[in-house]
Image 1 (cartoon, rainbow, N blue to C red):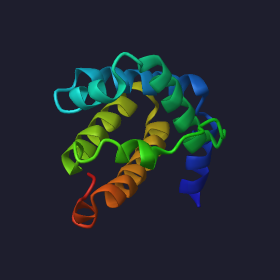
Image 2 (cartoon, rainbow, N blue to C red; image 1 turned 120 degrees about the vertical axis):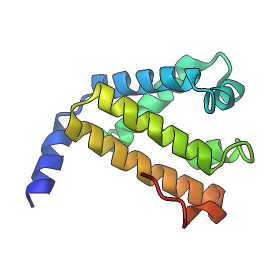
Image 3 (spheres, rainbow, N blue to C red; image 1 turned 90 degrees about the vertical axis):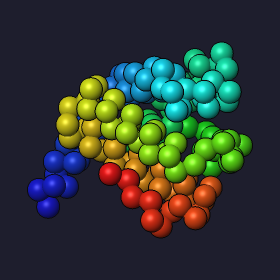
Length: 138
């Protein structure tokens, strides 16, 4: 029970400003990343601000239950197939973990990382089922 109280307190302390800081810093890292940068560049081009706004709304909906996100992440990622695979998801998660640790207090970072791991596992399982079972997010 104490872990639930700690998690609830951490979640209650998360703000839209923290979500924006995390998302913006994360995608700044992504744009510079040799593995992920080219994929995002092809998919997003010069439309970064709309993408960042959508990702802020996504994470707000996931973590704060704000209901701000009105999209379909599975469809968006399906359009990237076959250019993305398990290695891309692993790199995405590593950058996410790093950025969450840079931007957020540890309890809040852990919440975002747990959600990201679940999301990555589900997306990968749907997009590339051959990688879903043996693929471990560490």
